[in-house]
Length: 352
Image (cartoon, rainbow, N blue to C red; front, top):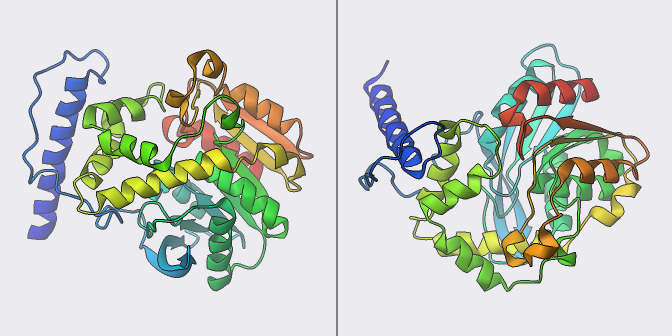
């Protein structure tokens, strides 16, 4: 092992210890007694650029040039070949709003071992891709993804997997380009209901200001709501990444892009068009997922009944010609992390 690797591992151990201490302080480790807060030295949690440069991904990251709002932008992606006998298929994974694509690691590995080529883009406005100050649209993100696939020589139908906001995008892509989707998998997709019916519109600046106000404690609580029993130490990297981005000199631009993508979700519902999906569809959701985008801005009396993902999945599926649901027990918003075996069994059973 090289000296550089040893130093890197030592830094990772120190970082993990500091993050665990923070989680204990917040009371997020079951059975743990809160301890006095110990602020991390600045050198332990350095700033992270808004393109999360240096944040590890499970495969090499490449870049593809696109245009957004008339601006040249870099779209990051991973392209992983089969790790077993090739089955001739390509799977495309679409990430959620608050999740970088490293969280797909186990799904990438599962599909690659089953013979898939796996393409994993970071959409414009997210993760390692550019974050222009512009109005975002699912149509434009779909066009970017289509252009990427064409450039990679993936011209046949793909198996498309979208999680959370990536589920909304996957629905839009499948509606716009049905000939390019063999099967569609929606994992806890945002947009199974129209948020405008119960939540008033917000200005982009209001949403950006909320991003700027997030503290480590508030973001831990935010992330924890996605899970039922996912270990606190495994939630910690989400918090670390977000807090390190907040220390970037370009954080205001990141916050603006985050706000603008919330506006995209709010203003561009896909729920009313799901009945037009022509390909086989699997909607896999956590039985205890109650995620509602921008819920805090709504009247609690009106939002109380929202976010029942099992019920919403069944309602949507009833309108789709060829659809099945998988309701995964004791799981929140991210089944592929919280109950990986159950999710992958549903995924593989549907795709294979």
